[in-house]
Length: 552
Image 1 (cartoon, one colour):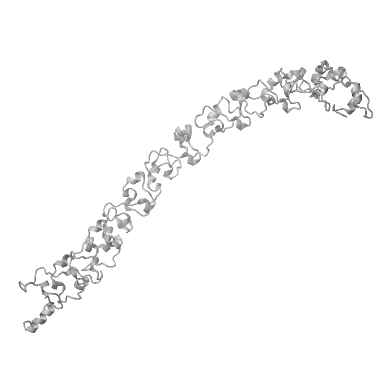
Image 2 (cartoon, rainbow, N blue to C red):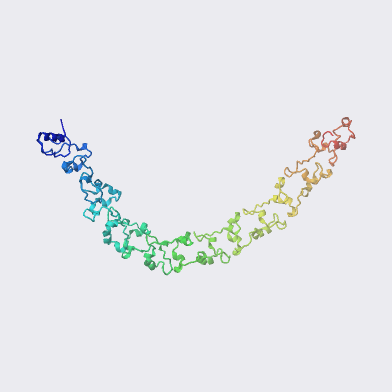
């Protein structure tokens, strides 16, 4: 039976074989856990006590430690498990009692990699990752671990002060090292010129050394305008001479950072864009004798000699405006074109094919009227078919003529009091306007058709006493023949007459006379009127009661 060390000790004391207290203190485990029957001493080199069954497994360096190194007073129960219970605080309370923040059971020596919580305050990356703790934590025998600044300058002040390319201290560089340096390495510093100064390094500026602009180590107050550095270039420029011509000192108007040459000037920025042939000219073609202080953008300010020398047509004699852009463009001086519609007289039809001199005779471009007759009066006066002068035609040519061609002419009779319809549309003007009379032609039919009226014999209009209002029976749409008469109430088909006038009008010379008794016999008529008061058998009395050919 296995008994605890306390029981063995009590038994031995009872027999008188052991007179001192147990060397194991309060250890209460079976002896064979650590001793063997081969001998009480020495204790096994590797005790068989399973520390894993306790609340503190022996791991790492603890596995090779003898029991008494931890259980120094032979106290085996209620032994503390905090590092500080065994390990003295050599940091003088700077790091707290939680040793495992930096140390582990694999070894007491600290490495940067083992300081896991360093990431929460000051991550150790780049060049910092390979440093030993005391490289930064200096200042005391055990190092300073509390109250250190996170600013680069707090550790690198000496480096800042000793730097000579460029000299940081004399140049007044800021102590915020991270503006130029990275934590990867101290060397190979870069500076974001745009972000820090607002002056982007582009083009040729990007390849310059700092000292090319920051002369004598001057980094503060460096001007950002071009002329601040390039005033010597401005003064020395001779093609053109910038100083002599009063050029502005805003170099960026013509130059860019890619290269000082070639320069380019945005002419549109001054209100005179260079287009067409102007774009191909050299500056001194317009700015003669180096005159860049031109105040006028009018064409004539350069082209007045061309204006005065022009003979086709002669601009001076013709009183042409000096605004060349009215007819010319920058594409080329020739050919010129004039928008006639802006003059109030658009060129259409045949006018488009004419030369300017055909209308502007003798170089007269100061015409003040746009009426046709101002040019075509000779045509008006010479016209005989019909004769416009004797016919009293209006001199408004466009009433009959168009710009498409002088002939054929057409007159819209609908605009008069006598519209042309039907057969009238096929008649020539002279058929009505006899003897070239276009001013006093009556509009009644008889004035033109008197001959037809007088020669008509079926029926004889004169003998029958027909009225001279031809339109009573005739229509211009149907033609002269096929006349129809509106018999008003009396149907012309009565009694089978079928529109034959002579059926009732037995006297062709007098249509005022009509005969009913030719068809209606007396015997039958009397029989039908036996009870009619005032009945008389004759045609006149018949019509008095039977005006619509029906019963009375």
